[in-house]
Length: 143
Image (cartoon, rainbow, N blue to C red; front, side):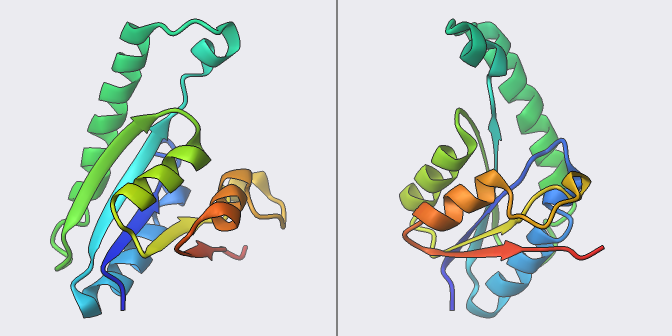
């Protein structure tokens, strides 16, 4: 049984949580595990220019926090403790860092956005699955 489950999502893409979050909750329920739902804001403009515009990043983080709060609110009455985390940086790196810091023993994530229409695992899921020190459940949706 699990003690702590991490669910990384993209708040802009419902497909990243509509299957993964309910699955994580179902896995958490039998052992009263806690579930942390996280998202990572990529500061693309700063990455490209090499200059960090703190106020822009702060605005993006605040928007992501609001969106994540709304998403998690829909699952609050499921009998599982839910936590939220919003970070900025590299998605794969931040997912692994949070999982390690929080003592997670399972990461549940979608393989990719269905809009990609491929049969490959997405780059972030692949990075996490390859480098995680804990179990990773990568969910695939058919159709």
